Length: 389
Image (cartoon, rainbow, N blue to C red; front, top):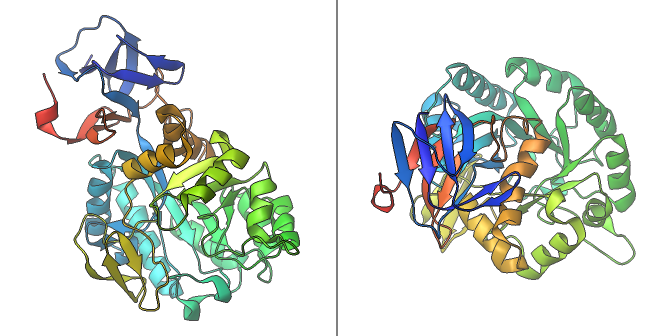
């Protein structure tokens, strides 16, 4: 074996394992056993935790870079930054912009994936957030760049990206939206309800057409009213919908998080960051999709006070999920790793700790801080002072 991790509780697919070693060979989890031998061994305290690598399905940027920068250096910088928070896979998330700008971002992602870079978090595909959104629920997206849902344009973008688009956020009340949803389902692309002012009936129709996801539930979305339940209620009540949650303590009140958890349960929530380029950097003024964003005290906002993404890390999202709902680490990690992997159709390879799967792993300290991240058997982040060989 190439590497052994030992000491902490291992949150495996079969349950929590103590006094167990995890063996890695050729990028895969080779063994889970009490006695293993390897060329390299890393031992951690018994009160640490080994969990599957996180998968962020909604992230725009980090460390000064954005997916819309449309170049490989930016994507590499983002992937390195994400690895430091325990993320081993992510969807590069675009913004509402000119068609040519989206073209450039998709080409950059395609070329980056083709180059097979093994450093940092793996770029698993694209989350196309816009431009098929509602002008009244744009959030920090550019309202002057929205266009109606368009199957031909979608087909163009999927071809351009070499079929890397995995998730599309759209407003189901827009003209031709239901036809686009049906097309996305046929192409095995997740259709997600988001940036929408849809009624309960319109949202229910979108779910019937194949929508299976809700982009940052509650945010930039028609809320709950006693006489018009809206998109949020439709998403909460449908067993077909997995809800994205941004758990930075800003986008959602803890009571709302608890409400969603009680309704959807651990199986139908996906933790995301929706982070922008200011993540990992100090407070200041940053660009997001051509708009100026002020970051102060962990909050990213446009000049008018509109929330503009976040600077949240996935490790913090997990901690907040536990804090807000009282759920255990295993449940929180499920929402950050297993559920996204299942949604993306890669659970046979990623999203849990089991023999034969990719060795995508995170070592967390007793306070749930990231100590080491392993992607496909290679250490891509570590705090060396916490590790014993």
